[in-house]
Amino acid sequence: MARQRELDLTIGLIRRARSNVKTSWVEQPVSPRTHETSYVDLMAVVIGDVTIGEHINIAPGATIVEALPDVSEELAVFASEVVEVNKELAAGYLNFEQRQLEQKKNAKRVKKEIEDIRQRKGQRRELWQWLYDSLKI
Image 1 (spheres, rainbow, N blue to C red):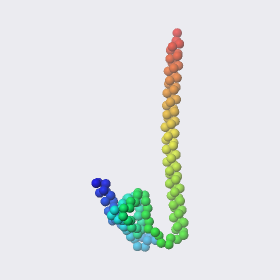
Image 2: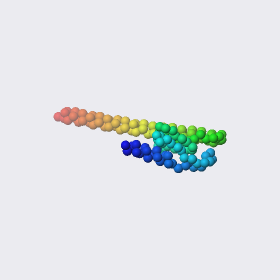
Image 3: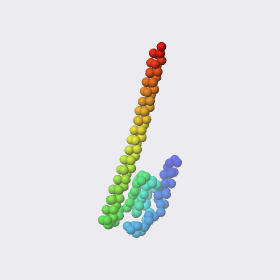
Image 4: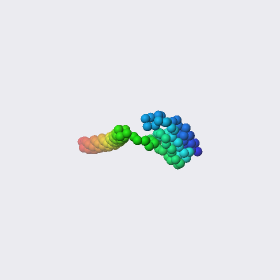
């Protein structure tokens, strides 16, 4: 019940969202329109004259943009370069996270090996002490 109320409030916030800003390709700022059965997460971005139909869920991080009329070739190239840079950044971040995880696993493994070596040294020391004590005359 509380979750449904939270969803209703979130949907209400999206429907009452202020107009998009004026840009070079949007001369008349408009507000996105959402159906009452749809859900747009607060972390999602909806730009332009967009209508979101029935029973649509837009996840966090999603970006919905209206189709742009006659985009110049330079702008299209720039946009594709931005997409490629973002892909590279995301891949680099994932590789970094994966390396950190592997380093943590390796550190745990090394720590375990050191503990095992110390334990074996202690056992050897006890054995030698026992032999020494038993051979005392």
